[in-house]
Length: 212
Image 1: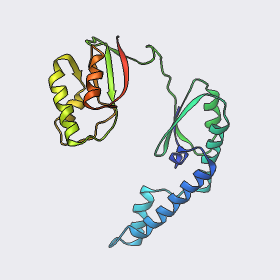
Image 2: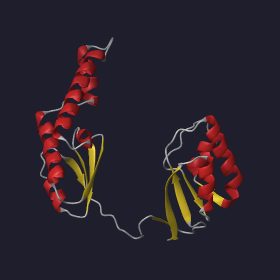
Image 3: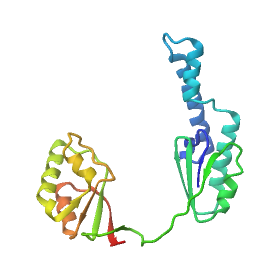
Image 4: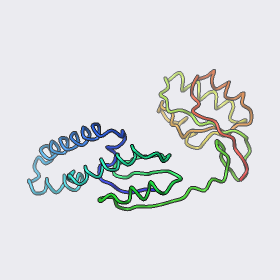
């Protein structure tokens, strides 16, 4: 389930006191923004600019945030709750939780989708897999020397593994932070041991590759 609810990202921590603190901070920050934006812009234009970017946080909005938090805190239904700016996503196998949430006054753009589980856990399906394993990297900042070692490692082993396109591009850039969507496909777990010698703790998780 997905839906729009203004300021719902204040619920990253489901605690009523914390929610109030976040809302108070946002109100204060927007008041400061009202005062700072402008310069040569007249008052009417300045108000239009600010109001377009940040809507007023109403009492109804705050009430809905606390009510939603209450639903999620008190429910015994297994679920996962994720927020992104003014949008929220609830994942569960029990639609009873959805029925409670949709009763909130100010939620909009409600959407539903169903995930079809068609593969075992910790696997990924590919049409014509050439390798049985895929490992994802962690997001870490490397020293210049560490990145040089990583470049040399992949350069020497590229005939024995598949390096994700994003990782290939990164290897050619001056940036030193890896991303957690970088991955390598390979056919022997000994490659992880070798990579661990080059940079310990670089692997985030490993999954098995199966044929679609």
